[in-house]
Length: 171
Picture 1 (cartoon, rainbow, N blue to C red):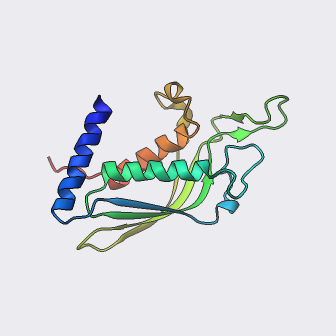
Picture 2: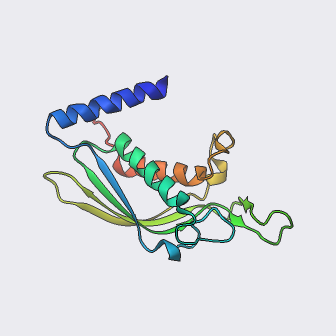
């Protein structure tokens, strides 16, 4: 019910901004040489071009959802992802667990990116960042999201996005 209400409010805001001539917020995500990423595959065999687009598609969709939630109408955010290191590691020396990603406190998720935020009437805001979450194993609700294979990366990106781009009312 709450999600349906949130979707209705976002749709109304989007329709209202389009009626006023302001385009809705947009997020464009690009991946710079994904075949060279440190660890961007949920497959223990490693990244093969086209074989594990799941990670890239899922992160793209998630960042676009965050844009709809946090960006103002008319803003355009272009994100170039330069490297991904997913949470956990494969430890092939474990018999019968060669395809299990072991989550340890030293295997936190990291994403290297650069971004450009454009908005009408203002200079573009550009930056390069390394987004990481060393405390990913301590996040509340982690067990409840155990079905989501990219939970740690999504939680990390959500915190980063909200800190960088959420508008903060003055009151």
